[in-house]
Length: 83
Image (cartoon, rainbow, N blue to C red; front, top):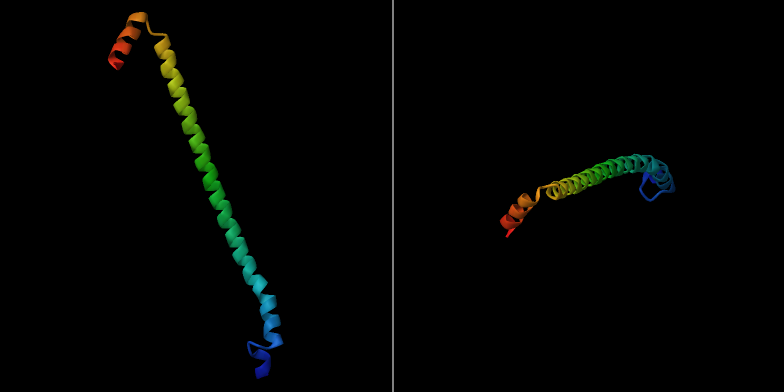
């Protein structure tokens, strides 16, 4: 019996070979769930950066349009202030 349970026995190797995938499966599942969570976080950050960039472009266009629609004397004053 002692030989059957020793770490060098075929029985011990078979048992280890059969049980290890059970434990590895849980580890693989956990890693998969972590990877999914990281992917979701990265996607949300990317989406936020797109929204921020869109707002910045919109604000810049709004500023340009307001400047274009200014009367000529106000445009001159704006140009003088910038120099």
